Amino acid sequence: MFERSGACTCAIPRASSTTSTNRASTSRAASSFPGLSANPLDPQPWWTRPLGDWLARQLCQYKHLRERNPDRIAWVLRGRIVARGPDDEPLLRDVEPIARLSAGLLDEAERRYEANFAAGLGPEGPED
Image 1 (cartoon, rainbow, N blue to C red):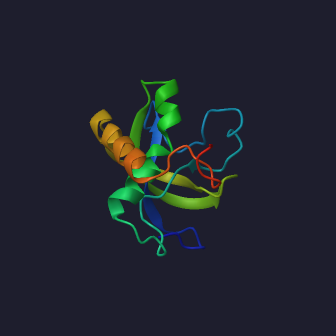
Image 2: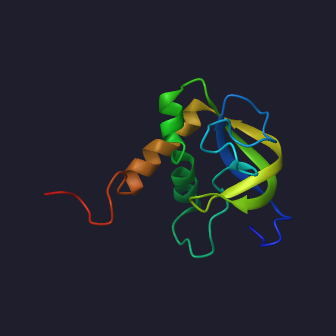
Image 3: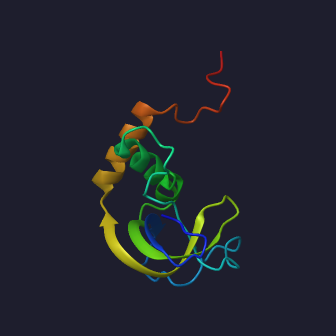
């Protein structure tokens, strides 16, 4: 769980081509971030749906990276939260890889996400 002190650790998915994770993203937009941008795998206290739905939703946040570059690897990392990014995502330092996520697992997460959420729709709902 995120603590304001930033001293805690959390597990997060990260799509990258390497496990060299103690520096910020190599994209120009993120080059000044103090840590790696990530999505937490622990659900928020207000989440009432199944844990599998939360995990599918979080893992699908990186779907566009996988589509653009199929050689990228999805990792679960543990790290120290040092700040929040521009989309309020945790930024991590001192990270260690916990697991590499298989393509099959990511495909399963995508199927679950599409089946259980209005994926791709805004708050206004479907267009008529």
